[in-house]
Length: 339
Ligand code: MF3
Ligand code: CO
Ligand code: CO
Image (cartoon, rainbow, N blue to C red; front, side):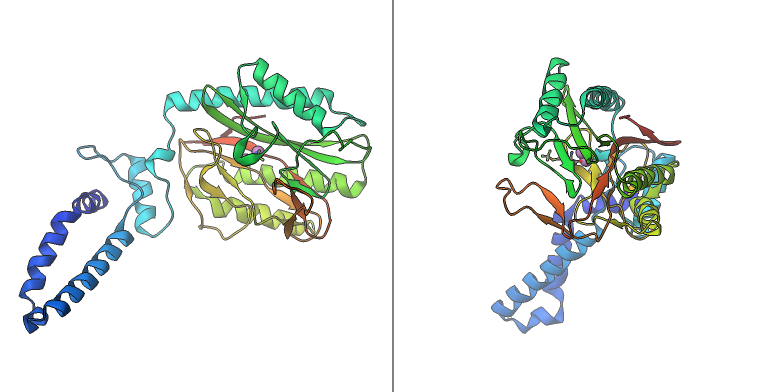
Protein backbone atom coordinates (compact mmCIF):
# COMPACT_ATOMS: atom_id res chain seq x y z
CA UNK A 1 0.00 0.00 0.00
CA UNK A 2 2.84 2.35 0.77
CA UNK A 3 4.11 1.98 -2.77
CA UNK A 4 0.72 2.85 -4.17
CA UNK A 5 0.69 6.16 -2.37
CA UNK A 6 4.22 6.90 -3.52
CA UNK A 7 3.01 6.39 -7.03
CA UNK A 8 0.15 8.86 -6.49
CA UNK A 9 2.65 11.41 -5.24
CA UNK A 10 4.70 10.89 -8.34
CA UNK A 11 1.65 11.65 -10.43
CA UNK A 12 1.41 15.22 -9.13
CA UNK A 13 4.73 16.88 -9.88
CA UNK A 14 3.26 20.32 -10.47
CA UNK A 15 1.97 20.41 -6.91
CA UNK A 16 5.38 19.43 -5.56
CA UNK A 17 7.10 22.12 -7.55
CA UNK A 18 4.62 24.66 -6.28
CA UNK A 19 5.41 23.73 -2.67
CA UNK A 20 9.07 24.01 -3.34
CA UNK A 21 8.74 27.48 -4.83
CA UNK A 22 6.94 28.90 -1.88
CA UNK A 23 9.49 27.37 0.49
CA UNK A 24 12.38 28.67 -1.57
CA UNK A 25 11.10 32.21 -1.43
CA UNK A 26 11.11 32.12 2.34
CA UNK A 27 14.58 30.70 2.78
CA UNK A 28 17.42 32.90 4.06
CA UNK A 29 19.43 32.07 1.00
CA UNK A 30 16.94 33.84 -1.21
CA UNK A 31 16.80 36.86 1.02
CA UNK A 32 20.16 37.86 -0.47
CA UNK A 33 17.85 39.56 -2.88
CA UNK A 34 19.91 38.79 -5.96
CA UNK A 35 17.71 38.04 -8.92
CA UNK A 36 20.43 36.09 -10.72
CA UNK A 37 21.49 34.06 -7.75
CA UNK A 38 17.88 33.36 -6.98
CA UNK A 39 17.24 32.18 -10.49
CA UNK A 40 20.32 29.98 -10.45
CA UNK A 41 19.53 28.47 -7.09
CA UNK A 42 15.99 27.77 -8.12
CA UNK A 43 17.14 26.09 -11.29
CA UNK A 44 19.62 24.01 -9.37
CA UNK A 45 17.09 22.96 -6.79
CA UNK A 46 14.56 22.17 -9.51
CA UNK A 47 17.08 19.89 -11.14
CA UNK A 48 17.67 18.10 -7.88
CA UNK A 49 13.97 17.72 -7.41
CA UNK A 50 13.58 16.28 -10.89
CA UNK A 51 16.45 13.86 -10.23
CA UNK A 52 14.99 12.64 -6.98
CA UNK A 53 11.68 12.26 -8.76
CA UNK A 54 13.39 10.16 -11.43
CA UNK A 55 14.97 7.96 -8.81
CA UNK A 56 11.63 7.38 -7.21
CA UNK A 57 9.86 6.55 -10.46
CA UNK A 58 8.31 3.17 -9.99
CA UNK A 59 7.87 0.64 -12.77
CA UNK A 60 5.09 -1.28 -11.08
CA UNK A 61 1.89 0.32 -9.86
CA UNK A 62 -1.67 -0.49 -8.97
CA UNK A 63 -4.29 1.60 -10.74
CA UNK A 64 -6.01 4.09 -8.42
CA UNK A 65 -8.91 2.57 -6.51
CA UNK A 66 -7.74 -1.04 -7.01
CA UNK A 67 -6.76 -3.34 -4.17
CA UNK A 68 -3.26 -4.74 -4.74
CA UNK A 69 -3.23 -8.47 -5.46
CA UNK A 70 -0.74 -10.98 -4.05
CA UNK A 71 1.22 -10.56 -7.27
CA UNK A 72 1.24 -6.75 -6.94
CA UNK A 73 2.53 -7.01 -3.40
CA UNK A 74 5.31 -9.42 -4.35
CA UNK A 75 6.47 -7.27 -7.25
CA UNK A 76 6.28 -4.06 -5.22
CA UNK A 77 8.32 -5.66 -2.42
CA UNK A 78 11.09 -6.57 -4.87
CA UNK A 79 11.01 -3.12 -6.42
CA UNK A 80 11.28 -1.52 -2.99
CA UNK A 81 14.45 -3.59 -2.51
CA UNK A 82 15.86 -2.00 -5.65
CA UNK A 83 15.40 -4.95 -7.99
CA UNK A 84 14.39 -4.61 -11.64
CA UNK A 85 10.73 -5.52 -12.03
CA UNK A 86 8.53 -5.59 -15.14
CA UNK A 87 6.16 -2.81 -16.08
CA UNK A 88 2.46 -3.76 -16.19
CA UNK A 89 2.60 -3.59 -20.00
CA UNK A 90 4.79 -6.71 -20.02
CA UNK A 91 2.00 -8.78 -18.50
CA UNK A 92 -0.02 -10.33 -21.30
CA UNK A 93 -3.79 -10.46 -21.27
CA UNK A 94 -5.60 -13.76 -21.84
CA UNK A 95 -6.34 -12.72 -25.38
CA UNK A 96 -2.71 -11.82 -26.07
CA UNK A 97 -1.54 -15.15 -24.64
CA UNK A 98 -3.92 -17.00 -26.96
CA UNK A 99 -2.57 -15.03 -29.92
CA UNK A 100 1.06 -15.69 -29.01
CA UNK A 101 0.24 -19.36 -28.40
CA UNK A 102 -1.20 -19.64 -31.93
CA UNK A 103 1.86 -17.90 -33.40
CA UNK A 104 3.91 -20.49 -31.49
CA UNK A 105 2.00 -23.37 -33.07
CA UNK A 106 2.65 -22.01 -36.57
CA UNK A 107 6.29 -21.30 -35.70
CA UNK A 108 6.72 -24.93 -34.62
CA UNK A 109 5.14 -26.15 -37.87
CA UNK A 110 7.51 -23.95 -39.88
CA UNK A 111 10.55 -25.44 -38.14
CA UNK A 112 9.07 -28.93 -38.58
CA UNK A 113 8.81 -28.23 -42.33
CA UNK A 114 12.49 -27.25 -42.33
CA UNK A 115 13.38 -30.37 -40.32
CA UNK A 116 11.58 -32.60 -42.82
CA UNK A 117 13.48 -31.23 -45.79
CA UNK A 118 16.91 -30.11 -44.62
CA UNK A 119 19.71 -32.23 -46.12
CA UNK A 120 23.26 -32.28 -47.43
CA UNK A 121 23.69 -30.43 -50.73
CA UNK A 122 20.84 -27.99 -50.05
CA UNK A 123 21.50 -24.25 -50.10
CA UNK A 124 20.46 -22.08 -47.19
CA UNK A 125 18.42 -20.07 -49.71
CA UNK A 126 16.28 -23.18 -50.13
CA UNK A 127 15.69 -23.28 -46.37
CA UNK A 128 14.65 -19.65 -46.59
CA UNK A 129 12.09 -20.50 -49.30
CA UNK A 130 10.65 -23.32 -47.18
CA UNK A 131 10.23 -20.87 -44.29
CA UNK A 132 8.70 -18.15 -46.45
CA UNK A 133 6.32 -20.48 -48.31
CA UNK A 134 5.13 -22.43 -45.27
CA UNK A 135 4.64 -19.31 -43.15
CA UNK A 136 2.74 -17.30 -45.76
CA UNK A 137 0.66 -20.28 -46.92
CA UNK A 138 -0.59 -20.62 -43.35
CA UNK A 139 -1.54 -17.00 -42.89
CA UNK A 140 1.64 -15.87 -41.16
CA UNK A 141 4.43 -13.40 -41.86
CA UNK A 142 8.11 -14.22 -41.35
CA UNK A 143 9.21 -11.47 -38.95
CA UNK A 144 12.86 -11.27 -40.11
CA UNK A 145 11.93 -10.32 -43.69
CA UNK A 146 12.89 -6.65 -44.09
CA UNK A 147 13.34 -6.29 -40.34
CA UNK A 148 15.92 -3.51 -39.93
CA UNK A 149 17.41 -4.36 -43.30
CA UNK A 150 17.48 -8.14 -42.84
CA UNK A 151 16.95 -9.53 -46.35
CA UNK A 152 15.37 -12.95 -45.67
CA UNK A 153 12.69 -14.89 -43.83
CA UNK A 154 14.91 -16.74 -41.37
CA UNK A 155 18.47 -16.86 -40.08
CA UNK A 156 20.71 -19.73 -41.11
CA UNK A 157 23.91 -19.89 -39.05
CA UNK A 158 26.43 -22.58 -39.97
CA UNK A 159 29.34 -23.75 -37.77
CA UNK A 160 31.29 -20.62 -36.69
CA UNK A 161 28.36 -18.33 -37.44
CA UNK A 162 26.92 -17.46 -34.03
CA UNK A 163 23.59 -16.08 -35.27
CA UNK A 164 21.86 -13.88 -37.90
CA UNK A 165 23.39 -15.86 -40.76
CA UNK A 166 21.86 -14.79 -44.07
CA UNK A 167 20.45 -17.47 -46.38
CA UNK A 168 22.29 -17.65 -49.69
CA UNK A 169 22.32 -19.71 -52.90
CA UNK A 170 26.08 -20.01 -52.38
CA UNK A 171 25.96 -21.63 -48.95
CA UNK A 172 25.55 -25.34 -49.57
CA UNK A 173 25.13 -27.66 -46.61
CA UNK A 174 27.91 -30.19 -46.29
CA UNK A 175 28.18 -33.41 -44.34
CA UNK A 176 29.25 -32.62 -40.78
CA UNK A 177 27.92 -29.05 -40.74
CA UNK A 178 25.97 -27.86 -37.73
CA UNK A 179 23.38 -25.23 -38.59
CA UNK A 180 20.97 -23.14 -36.58
CA UNK A 181 17.74 -22.18 -38.29
CA UNK A 182 16.01 -19.33 -36.46
CA UNK A 183 12.41 -18.48 -37.33
CA UNK A 184 10.20 -15.79 -35.92
CA UNK A 185 6.57 -16.00 -36.95
CA UNK A 186 3.95 -13.27 -36.88
CA UNK A 187 0.35 -14.48 -36.81
CA UNK A 188 -2.54 -12.02 -36.39
CA UNK A 189 -0.01 -9.50 -35.10
CA UNK A 190 1.48 -11.81 -32.45
CA UNK A 191 5.09 -13.03 -32.43
CA UNK A 192 6.74 -16.36 -31.59
CA UNK A 193 10.48 -16.92 -31.92
CA UNK A 194 12.36 -20.24 -31.92
CA UNK A 195 15.44 -21.84 -33.39
CA UNK A 196 16.83 -25.35 -33.67
CA UNK A 197 20.16 -26.91 -34.50
CA UNK A 198 20.37 -29.39 -37.34
CA UNK A 199 23.27 -31.74 -37.91
CA UNK A 200 23.96 -32.54 -41.54
CA UNK A 201 24.72 -36.23 -41.88
CA UNK A 202 27.25 -37.36 -39.35
CA UNK A 203 29.36 -34.77 -37.57
CA UNK A 204 32.43 -34.88 -35.34
CA UNK A 205 32.05 -35.86 -31.67
CA UNK A 206 33.20 -32.31 -30.78
CA UNK A 207 30.46 -30.63 -32.78
CA UNK A 208 27.87 -33.13 -31.56
CA UNK A 209 28.88 -32.38 -27.97
CA UNK A 210 28.62 -28.61 -28.50
CA UNK A 211 25.12 -28.99 -29.95
CA UNK A 212 24.10 -31.23 -27.04
CA UNK A 213 25.47 -28.90 -24.38
CA UNK A 214 23.76 -25.88 -26.00
CA UNK A 215 20.48 -27.82 -25.76
CA UNK A 216 21.18 -28.67 -22.12
CA UNK A 217 21.85 -24.97 -21.47
CA UNK A 218 18.39 -24.08 -22.80
CA UNK A 219 16.80 -26.81 -20.67
CA UNK A 220 18.68 -25.62 -17.57
CA UNK A 221 17.42 -22.08 -18.15
CA UNK A 222 13.94 -23.51 -18.45
CA UNK A 223 14.31 -25.51 -15.21
CA UNK A 224 15.35 -22.40 -13.29
CA UNK A 225 12.07 -20.91 -14.50
CA UNK A 226 10.03 -23.81 -13.13
CA UNK A 227 8.58 -21.31 -10.66
CA UNK A 228 7.71 -17.62 -11.06
CA UNK A 229 9.44 -14.74 -9.26
CA UNK A 230 12.92 -15.81 -10.31
CA UNK A 231 15.34 -13.34 -11.87
CA UNK A 232 16.83 -13.39 -15.33
CA UNK A 233 20.25 -13.50 -13.64
CA UNK A 234 19.30 -16.77 -11.95
CA UNK A 235 18.83 -18.55 -15.25
CA UNK A 236 21.83 -16.84 -16.84
CA UNK A 237 24.02 -17.90 -13.96
CA UNK A 238 22.93 -21.55 -14.23
CA UNK A 239 23.37 -21.61 -18.02
CA UNK A 240 26.88 -20.14 -17.89
CA UNK A 241 27.92 -22.59 -15.14
CA UNK A 242 26.88 -25.52 -17.32
CA UNK A 243 28.63 -24.13 -20.41
CA UNK A 244 31.84 -23.44 -18.49
CA UNK A 245 31.81 -26.88 -16.87
CA UNK A 246 31.96 -28.28 -20.40
CA UNK A 247 34.82 -26.02 -21.45
CA UNK A 248 32.60 -23.71 -23.50
CA UNK A 249 31.76 -20.01 -23.29
CA UNK A 250 28.53 -18.02 -23.44
CA UNK A 251 28.09 -15.19 -25.94
CA UNK A 252 27.54 -11.91 -24.09
CA UNK A 253 26.82 -9.47 -26.88
CA UNK A 254 23.43 -10.94 -27.72
CA UNK A 255 20.64 -12.04 -25.46
CA UNK A 256 17.12 -13.44 -25.29
CA UNK A 257 14.25 -10.99 -25.04
CA UNK A 258 10.63 -10.35 -24.30
CA UNK A 259 8.53 -11.32 -27.32
CA UNK A 260 4.88 -11.56 -28.28
CA UNK A 261 3.49 -8.12 -28.99
CA UNK A 262 6.66 -7.11 -30.75
CA UNK A 263 9.79 -8.86 -32.03
CA UNK A 264 12.14 -7.69 -29.30
CA UNK A 265 10.79 -6.34 -26.04
CA UNK A 266 11.87 -6.07 -22.42
CA UNK A 267 13.38 -7.88 -20.63
CA UNK A 268 16.87 -8.60 -21.88
CA UNK A 269 17.47 -12.27 -21.15
CA UNK A 270 21.20 -12.59 -20.72
CA UNK A 271 22.58 -16.10 -20.60
CA UNK A 272 25.26 -15.34 -18.01
CA UNK A 273 25.39 -13.21 -14.90
CA UNK A 274 24.75 -13.00 -11.19
CA UNK A 275 21.80 -14.52 -9.40
CA UNK A 276 19.24 -11.94 -8.35
CA UNK A 277 20.16 -9.50 -11.13
CA UNK A 278 18.18 -8.73 -14.26
CA UNK A 279 14.41 -8.58 -14.37
CA UNK A 280 12.01 -10.40 -12.09
CA UNK A 281 9.99 -12.90 -14.15
CA UNK A 282 6.35 -12.95 -13.14
CA UNK A 283 3.21 -14.73 -14.39
CA UNK A 284 1.95 -13.37 -17.71
CA UNK A 285 5.35 -12.46 -19.16
CA UNK A 286 6.42 -13.94 -22.50
CA UNK A 287 10.09 -14.11 -23.44
CA UNK A 288 12.73 -16.19 -25.15
CA UNK A 289 15.68 -18.11 -23.78
CA UNK A 290 18.28 -18.62 -26.51
CA UNK A 291 21.80 -19.26 -25.25
CA UNK A 292 24.58 -19.01 -27.83
CA UNK A 293 27.35 -21.37 -26.74
CA UNK A 294 30.81 -21.10 -28.27
CA UNK A 295 33.34 -23.90 -28.52
CA UNK A 296 36.11 -21.34 -27.95
CA UNK A 297 36.00 -17.85 -26.47
CA UNK A 298 32.83 -15.76 -26.11
CA UNK A 299 34.01 -12.88 -28.30
CA UNK A 300 32.07 -12.30 -31.50
CA UNK A 301 32.67 -10.16 -34.55
CA UNK A 302 31.08 -9.15 -37.84
CA UNK A 303 31.85 -10.46 -41.29
CA UNK A 304 33.90 -7.91 -43.30
CA UNK A 305 32.18 -8.97 -46.53
CA UNK A 306 28.67 -8.71 -45.14
CA UNK A 307 27.19 -5.44 -46.32
CA UNK A 308 24.06 -5.89 -44.24
CA UNK A 309 26.21 -6.05 -41.08
CA UNK A 310 23.84 -8.67 -39.65
CA UNK A 311 26.05 -11.77 -39.62
CA UNK A 312 27.69 -12.57 -36.27
CA UNK A 313 30.76 -14.83 -36.16
CA UNK A 314 32.92 -16.22 -33.38
CA UNK A 315 36.05 -14.10 -33.26
CA UNK A 316 38.35 -17.11 -32.92
CA UNK A 317 36.64 -19.13 -35.65
CA UNK A 318 35.46 -21.83 -33.24
CA UNK A 319 32.01 -23.39 -33.69
CA UNK A 320 28.89 -22.02 -32.00
CA UNK A 321 25.51 -23.60 -31.25
CA UNK A 322 22.14 -22.20 -30.15
CA UNK A 323 18.61 -23.34 -29.41
CA UNK A 324 15.72 -20.99 -28.73
CA UNK A 325 12.16 -21.21 -27.46
CA UNK A 326 9.42 -18.74 -26.57
CA UNK A 327 8.07 -19.12 -23.03
CA UNK A 328 5.10 -17.97 -21.02
CA UNK A 329 5.70 -17.55 -17.29
CA UNK A 330 2.74 -18.89 -15.29
CA UNK A 331 1.98 -19.38 -11.58
CA UNK A 332 3.59 -22.81 -11.97
CA UNK A 333 6.68 -21.83 -13.93
CA UNK A 334 7.29 -21.51 -17.65
CA UNK A 335 5.24 -23.10 -20.35
CA UNK A 336 6.97 -23.48 -23.68
CA UNK A 337 4.96 -21.96 -26.54
CA UNK A 338 7.20 -23.25 -29.32
CA UNK A 339 8.41 -26.82 -29.65
N1 MF3 B 1 15.26 -14.44 -34.31
C1 MF3 B 1 16.34 -13.68 -33.79
C2 MF3 B 1 16.18 -13.69 -32.30
O1 MF3 B 1 16.18 -14.74 -31.75
C3 MF3 B 1 16.37 -12.31 -34.34
C4 MF3 B 1 16.70 -12.26 -35.74
S1 MF3 B 1 16.59 -10.66 -36.29
C5 MF3 B 1 16.71 -10.88 -37.94
O2 MF3 B 1 15.99 -12.72 -31.64
F1 MF3 B 1 16.39 -9.78 -38.48
F2 MF3 B 1 17.93 -11.29 -38.20
F3 MF3 B 1 15.88 -11.83 -38.28
CO1 CO C 1 14.91 -14.41 -30.15
CO1 CO D 1 15.12 -16.18 -32.87
